[in-house]
Image 1 (cartoon, helix red, strand yellow):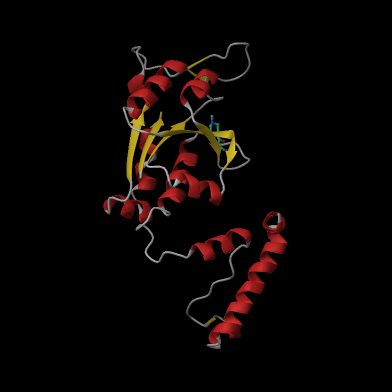
Image 2 (cartoon, rainbow, N blue to C red):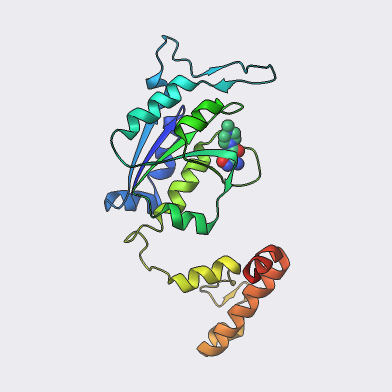
Length: 227
Ligand code: 4HQ
């Protein structure tokens, strides 16, 4: 899997993507991540990437030329899917992550200000993705979210690969509560069933716990599973 990220804040990425699992995935050559500075594709001496919106209104809009030229250059002759991170994009779900993980090459375009000129979207973007219904200052954190959740699905990245069964279970149902040693932390005890050694009882308890949590915090997920 190869990711190419186009951004005006290239320095934001290394601290996040060069740690933990994503770092190890890069070391194992399972993923390659290239970060490109949008300003390297400008043609004026001020390296300008934005301008005032036609029709008026607040804020600035990212201009067409640096974006379309950057995307074209980064693409080269490869078969690539070009994604824009945008609050009006398709909501990111685990199902969507699984589909994207099948791609070999992804370009992630990070917008700023009020957004990007619509002609970039129609000319150069295959799909817009939103990581949730809230407004961020830019597409960089959403791009990192995408790299993170796709990378963990690349074969050979996760140490103990969870079965697809377990994953679909988790999706419909929030996880069960986890405990580790000590069995008694300052009077707070681990539920007895987990110390019982009765694997059938443990499985049943975890399922009930997960279901209760889902009912309480994510009833929408239960409805979704029935559909
Ligand atoms: N933004 N999911 C505005 C987001 C966002 C989101 C990125 C803020 C794009 C122009 N992106 N810029 N939510 O809020 O992806």
